[in-house]
Length: 79
Image (cartoon, rainbow, N blue to C red; front, side, top):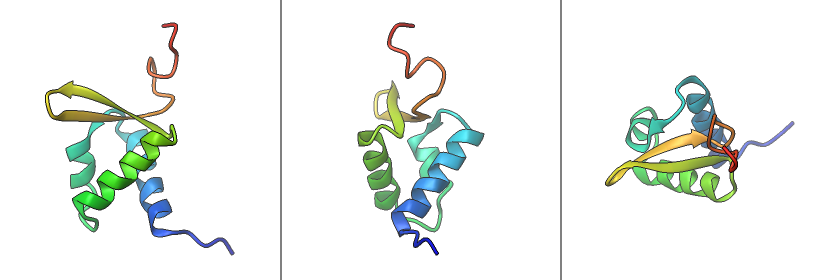
């Protein structure tokens, strides 16, 4: 039986949310995880962006959107 670590559960939740709601604001993502702290979500988003699972974009000063790695237009540098 596979052991799932807490950060893996959160990672799966984040990916599932982004499949259903592409381009969520970081704050929206945090609001949709009421059983976790802001810091836990932020650290997992940071880890996932560093490994290339997701991408962050700035939509306004201090406002970040979270995208799936393969979301249209983000993973193709020649578009």
